[in-house]
Amino acid sequence: MMAADDFGFGTQIRKSPYFDATVRWGAQGFSVYNHMYIPRDFGDPEHNFWNLVNEAILCDVGVERQVEITGPDAAKFVQMLTPRDLSKMAVGQCKYILITNAAGGILNDPILLRLAENHFWISLADSDILLWAQGVAINSGLDVQIGEPDVSPLQLQGPKSGEIMRALFGDEIMDLKYYWLREVELDGIPLIVSRTGWSSELGYELYLRDSAHGDSLWERIMATGMEFGLKPGHTSSIRRIEGGMLSYHADADIHTNPYELGLDRLVNLDMEADFIGKAALRRIRDEGVTRKQVGLIIEADPLKGPNTTFWAVQNGGEDVGKVTSAVYSPRLERNIALAMVSVEHAHLGMQLDVVLPSGPAVATVVERPFFDPKKSLAAA
Image: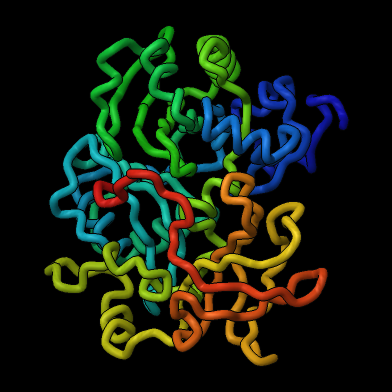
């Protein structure tokens, strides 16, 4: 691998404030997400998984860009973007939301943070919602300002993450509730800390509010976390598929609607507020969907890594859907997958065939998530 100072594809793919630190700490491969590098390789992904589920990992997720919405009409505007009812969202609260287009298709599945009465951040998955929001605002007649602030999140995830947070911020951080945020400083570094993350484990996100401090923040957290077994890492495909968490562009896209994913709880068609896609989503709800997301157990040799293409799902030689995310879980000792299949093939216990690169394999429809110990998603 080339030295950090000449690694890259030019200036159009941006680097996070933690980029050099992650290379120093062993990042060996990167993917691109929101037009930025994201570390995807710190060695064996199974080691990364066990570090996450047993101790803790620190991940550079500066790619989770923030769309900042301020102004007198900020709350009204944000509600236009999502079918989830935000009327009871308090200052200091976070919510998992879907952003839908006029056809009810999913444009993004971000976390929404409410920093103040008229101050929101949309913490993005991988699509250009800054452009969408600015476009929606033009003819809305609403008084809002929309931009991308200098904000770069880190994820500190895993069962030891709480102890590491206590060592960093003191006892008072321990009463931060699931899906709530707090404004804090660490050695004078301005942060928003939330109890959120993309891991299905106990976790926190630390939103750096001044990129000049990226290197020192990374080093400070790693130094504090050492005694708790903290390792540098990357978001774990194994753990997020175990937890049934979506990856945008894989499990959901502009052609996928919330009902196909079983995310009815994120859609409120009865609220007075209007939002983009309301009429379409009402029609989809009333007519019913033709396909649904399911979990699959695939009977085959352990997969060597996540799928890089959508594998056909068949019944009697006929295509009935596609595998969207698949991986081998060393904890469950199973190949597990999320798939989108026609509704008549979405019944628990049904046997289907998956066309792997190595050939067809038998798969069984099972419940999602595959592993979710005592974790309530209701609060999110």
